[in-house]
Length: 286
Length: 354
Image (cartoon, rainbow over all chains, first blue to last red; front, side, top):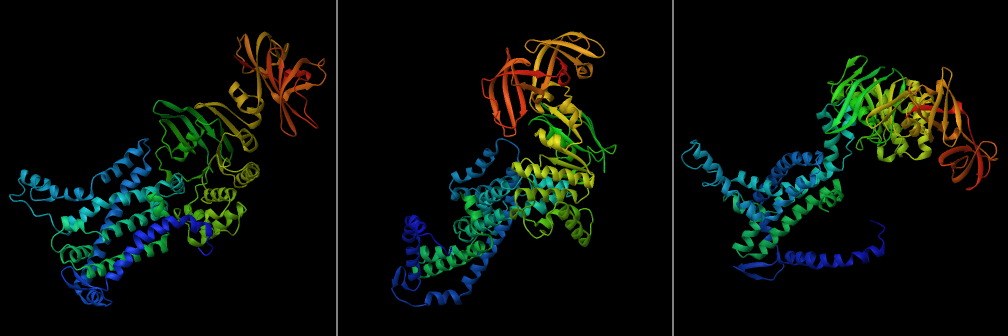
């Protein structure tokens, strides 16, 4: 990084200009907006004051939302890691020539809008849904059991939508492991499980970490899933932004909250890149 | 130390017979090579001994004990892979000590054993480096150290030298043989390289298409091939058709189309059926002597020359028969188109049934 070829900068300049125009400058507007003062619905006064930031710092409601968001993101990430590792392992280790088909199956859900996929859970867990119909048909219950609109369905919805990101990342790192390493460990005296724990698992950690980062950041920034599948108390921090901007028409506060979320999730990415580097992520996404 | 025995070992992949009824004894302490072209089943046999493949039929025995159903990690074998298969996330010390921790070796003993293994492969003091920091040849030595440090009953070597470049390969094969000789471990070496097999082995098993073609010492398989395949696979051999004229206890008289009649010693004709009327005469290219004077020998003409420095391989035509001749040369090789006289000593010829 210390020695930069001047030609590299020239080659990068179109993309840098694009990022500047489309990301950095709009973000700067949002930052500026966070110092404006909201007078009434959709009426703002250009100013330089810290009222919005003071409200964020003092109101426990916002703090609770931050903790809730971090907690839920961690739960979803951990579950996705466990649930995603298994299919990734199966796809990576399969001997079949139709591996591409398994990978296609993984990508196929992306052909359907994620909102539609999220809404589909209503037909599974809802009072008229598949689970309740089955329970009633079996005579296990007379009236529908309330299963929807709680934290559980929000987590299920997140896992459903974000699992492919985890699987793809873990798959890429498992696929890059030399196939002779596990047999080598086995001949040296390791049981299948020991060989996995000693060799395959540590070598797949970069993929697990990259998948974890994506799932964590994607969950942390979500608002649609809790909106559709959650109850009144199952809001994430991004839902507060949605409320501030769309419902309350308080753009300065929305800008303040947006910047806060950006800083929080951005710091997660920075910590990750310090620990792991971004190579693995670009490998999985390319 | 152990003797490995394969009894009627068969491996099928669907309809493909990778190994067909192999009966082989790997002698205790010997360096035995499975030699053959790719796809001949040699690696499949090695992997079945290691437990990485399951035999379709037949038994694998170590010291008389059937081990077919013994899981890989309980077989106590050392396996060296072609691509080294070192654990990239572990240091050299941890790589070598990997097998020791499953054998209840204490930490301090393990450190001493690792040090000793590194001394054996002549790479002392690199315990704390990572595999990626070593060259290919060094990595292969570490792979060998990792396999021998557990004092395996059998050392299995799956083309361990073929990923190395030519000079290093020759150096490593001398060293590998020396290490094996020093520790005396029963070794099974898989290769497709005939010079590696000849240089290193106590015994060579030549394989082709799932069959064992010949088992013998390097000298036996080279000088007394029992099939045309073995003759052709180990060095360049000429195969000439002939008619059996007369045979008795001491000699066999055959006539060839272009090389005249030859009187072969009976000892060279053990591969010739008693009633055979036709015989394949096999003569190694280095036994075909070219005389610059066409009058001395059967007249022939040089069609092509493959110059290799101290050696030259000549492609010659005698009448309608094409032959190869390999000769040590001191100066420039003979030119294409030169008329020469071909001399073949019948004692250098082997007769096989058609």
